[in-house]
Length: 283
Image 1 (cartoon, helix red, strand yellow):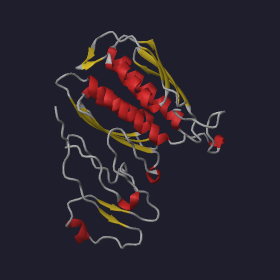
Image 2 (image 1 turned 120 degrees about the vertical axis):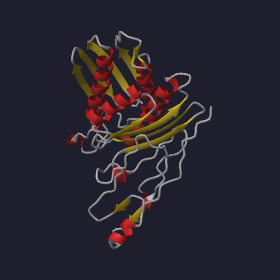
Image 3 (image 1 turned 135 degrees about the vertical axis):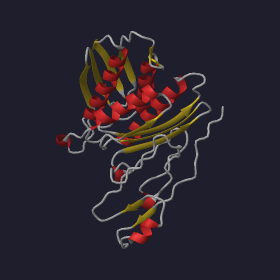
Image 4 (image 1 turned 90 degrees about the vertical axis):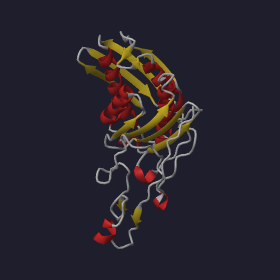
């Protein structure tokens, strides 16, 4: 099955700091978003003032490149970042089974724009953004006529790769995260280490085979795939819970808060790498 998600690239009118501001007639005559740079502004795709909603719209990877701030995502899982925008990872993964685009900003504001074709997965990615205060943008299409397995997996692989790239050399971060999240009767504990060593310990007892149309077996596979590409040690434990939706949602909320804690900066480290070895990497 061949998947095609491309649409004509958007055009952008960009003014440099030394340029004069556009007059109102200019703005009226353009059908495209106008981005203005000044000496005190930082450009961000996630700025609420210029946020361009992409839900329910044809997907195209970002193609703009003003002043080299943003770079086109490369093919098949190769990410790009921009220090001007904070810690950002951007990945496009294309296979015969799926077409996935992920952009993640660790220093965001909780902006979520997710459209994977799997409604429950979209809902969980929204939890990741909201409770981690990450900006998470995911667009995906896959071989849904078979099942959701490949799309679920490839979204997680791309997300893990984006996280890996956004973290960079990991200087100054807390590295460890630990959080317990309740949701009604459910209580989930997540502990993680951004160690560079991929490992998943997963202990959830989800009582039903599906939540809506989502196969609950895919929850473990999602986190295993994310761990594999991000180089994260992740432990997930269910302390209580009977409702499948509550158990899974509490898991994503706890993961988001633990990841937020681990990726935030420790001022006492003064930019040093949080390792006695002096390096944190996947090798």
